[in-house]
Length: 168
Image 1 (spheres, one colour):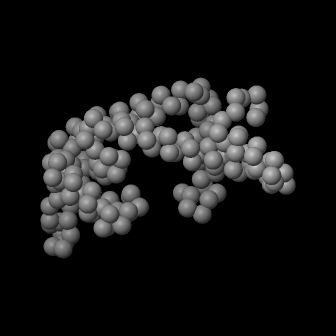
Image 2: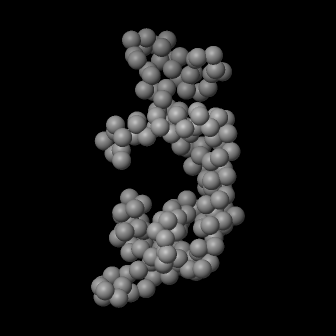
Image 3: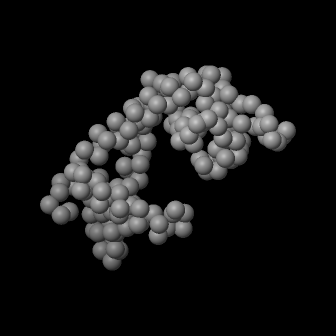
């Protein structure tokens, strides 16, 4: 445990060591903590977006449009690819966000079967506030590490992710 107080992953590792001392559980230590962090931070992010009337899925759509730069317009297909969602899954999110006047869908002038999805001024204002709230929650969680440790962790996770089949 490297001098740190134990956590729930350490307890699981100790149980495995008692019943299967032959197992090398290092991967379980790493990924167990990554899964717990992802779950905890996912919950924190959902709570950060509640005051803005959006869930994580809607945030992701608005953020993808915002990151695309002016005029904050993408096709549903581009959004689906960016968010790794089926077009069916995207439609429900777009419907909800359009009803809330945070985005609008309009015909693609270059493709009569295509659509453009564009942030409205209200959507732009909301996503700029919501991204700040989400980032504040993440920054608070990261404050357990100093700047050097946070940088090392980011580098290590990038390397780890690049070595996985789905890594980019």
